[in-house]
Length: 307
Image (cartoon, rainbow, N blue to C red; front, top):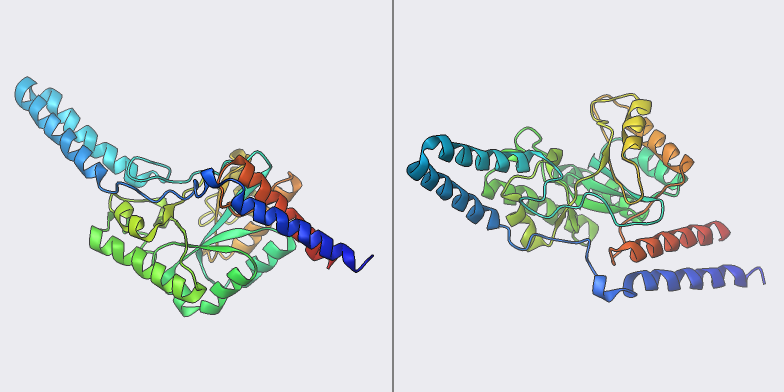
């Protein structure tokens, strides 16, 4: 009987995983929302500018100029605000009823990668690593180790031009995203399905680069500014303010202050203490699929511990 229990548990777990991916075909890929009309902003922007010129010509520039400048300011704001949906769809949080979160870790692979992977294993947590193509190219074994341990990778540009990514013209933007996608796909054996803009700032030309690759832009709703803040307690306090089921948490590895591993550990401890599990998005993408995905992860961990 002792020999058959793990087999039975494993079969039950497999059934849940299969249900997770097939039970809700009508909701399939609802989380994956690549841009459908990446240039619609240009038509709307041009129309608004024309309207502003007409109003200025007919009614006076005291009315027309605010319309013209206001439209330009709106476009600029949409570029700088990571959660803006004005220029392209963006995931800010996941639909979930259970106490689950999506932990995302940017800027790897780095010297911190191995220690962070060990921490995630210790806490039975899964994460999506938004990796830089150039860094993955120089450390492919670390990328493969992320995948081997059951985590996911996302596209975070090829060279991470943090000071001017938001201002890249169309050709340079495509090069950053396309080259990273090619490098990551070659190393991983499959291309990423998620993209995160450098510093979260996605200008009007990002959507056109994402559409042919089928990439979905991902932002966040909970962050601790851990690239600048070296105190794990302060980072945790900031994240805790926005913590709720389905939250997308932003963390980093390889920060200049050298405290990224300690910060990730503090966040994992806090999440566990408050009953949260770190899971990856389910293919179905709705509440039921997220809950099934959580159940499957729980059962898989239980089976592993029995084995």
